[in-house]
Length: 287
Image 1: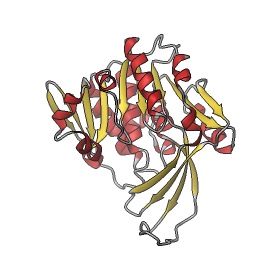
Image 2 (image 1 turned 120 degrees about the vertical axis):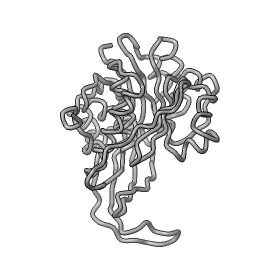
Image 3 (image 1 turned 45 degrees about the vertical axis):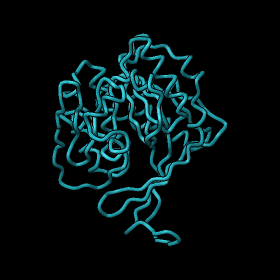
């Protein structure tokens, strides 16, 4: 095991269509041409981390189809180790994404092969040399719970991007080094940001979109601003960019506030280009 960062999560093909507005129930709206891009919370997080210099491996699954090949190529060209990405008999996961002129998106995910990321995949992992395990929830919840427990027992710091929100065992929450949620998810979990720590994690980060993020620790709350960008083109995958960059910096030894400041820059830069993985900046671009 040579990677300092392990990412466990989904790999999806993103089918993106631009629309003037989102359709109402029972309504048809014409959109632009469909663009197929590599995505998925796990793959996005891994690529974002690799682009800024992390030594990272993805634990996941794709189908033996063209979308799976697209994802492997994107991961490998970004420097992500794909030895732990298995090929499933199920089709590669797909995210159906509509993007409106203001850059906001709505997403429907068909998990496909992601549902095959299993407990045995976690049991086969070696945590030797790993500093951080980062998970997200587009793969089976029991697999994520199992992985966080195994990493915690191995002395590896654990990061969970709790999106979409799911009910986790109390023990799993106590094993978290960092819980990442956005404002809406935080409101579902606790009455205020500080109360997120009462759920069990050592620390929490609330991402605030264009306003940056809030780092919640026992010592207090530090708000980290986002950098200003000239134009928001597409917000798809910005949260994953934040999680990947944050994990990369934690694996390098940054403290949580330092890591969050860096991650906020990466997330802000990612919204200036179309798509998720293709939009992620390199370390040189972040500066």
